Length: 206
Image (cartoon, rainbow, N blue to C red; front, top):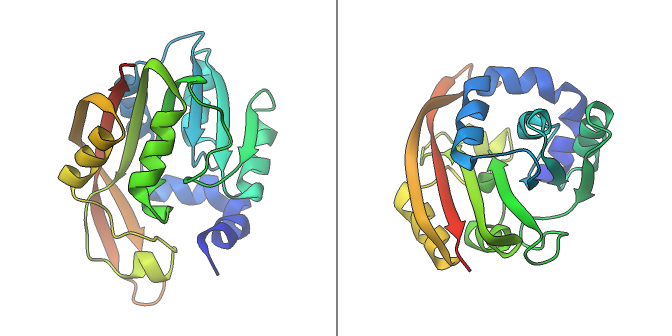
C-alpha cells in the first residue's frame, strides 16, 4: 500500500484521527505565519480533509485544495463545496505559474518523494510577493511512522528545509520551532511518541 491508498482508506475517519496527532493551535500559527487576508487566492497543498482550508475559507480567501487522495478531496468537498479541489502530486502541481498569493502545506512534505522539488513547485505557483508556509515534522527516528502510516521521510533537519526554500528562489526565509508536537502511537508495540513540529516560510519577490 502506498500513501495514496492509505489516505484513501482512512479519509472518512481522518478528521477524528487528526485530532489525536496535532492540535488546532498549530493551524492558527500557520495562518498567522501566512498573513492570510480576505481576497487572497490560496493553495492548500496536501489539503487532506481541510484542516488548513477551513481557516482560509473562514478568513475570506479563495482556496484551491490539492491532494493525491481522491477520497480525501471528496471529504473536503462535502464540508467546503465552494473550494476548488484538484487531485495531483507534489512534484507536478495542477496549477499554472504565478496563480496564487499564498501556498500552505501542513504535514505534507514528509509524504512526497522529493521534498526539494515539491517546495520548488509550490514556489512556482506563487505570484510576486506571494508567501509559502510549511508545517512539518522535525527529524526523528520512529520507524513505525514509516511502516504504519506510510511516511516517506522521518521528518527533516530545519537547515535542509531552509536551503530548499532558498534554492526555490524564496527570500525572507524562516524555519522555526512551532512549539507544537505531533503525537502518534504504534499499533503493534503500543509505542507512543511526540515529534516536534517546525514552521517554515519564504516570500517570492519576483
